[in-house]
Image 1 (cartoon, one colour):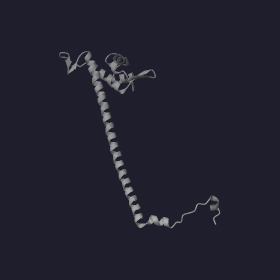
Image 2 (tube, helix red, strand yellow):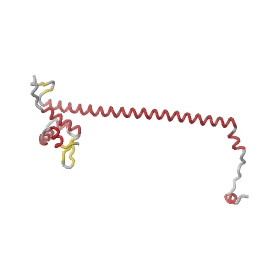
Image 3 (cartoon, one colour):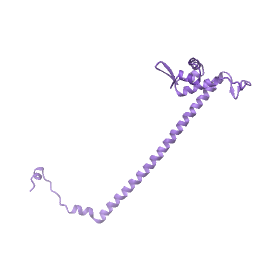
Image 4 (cartoon, one colour):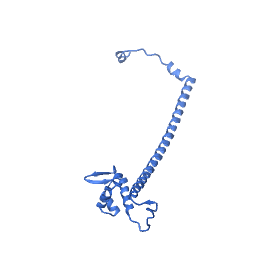
Length: 168
């Protein structure tokens, strides 16, 4: 967010010139929602700043070209000219936002790929652990280890805590 004075200094015009410009149509309509008042000073968002600068760049008189039938290098003179400038600035802003979104989508796709690879590795590890456990159980059943451990023990009779304390 920049103040009107900061924008005016960057453009090389007075603060009053910027205020006059943003009060006129079509710029005043385009700036709705892109300005706010902070500590009693009007601030403009980055998108609003681009629109203001675009409006001032369109006002610079050109001595290189003379209008022919109201058209200079494909641009129409008159009230439509301001609207075209605003639309061009809006298109530029939207293209910038689209590039940001494209980068975000690419980053998310990379994250999804990394997570998918990690999930596949975890599934393979789990499958290997299950196979190892199943093999261990089969080996114990074949050798009879599980039965021997339990055969050597006599069932313990239930005794109360007093009789456990004073074993005889």
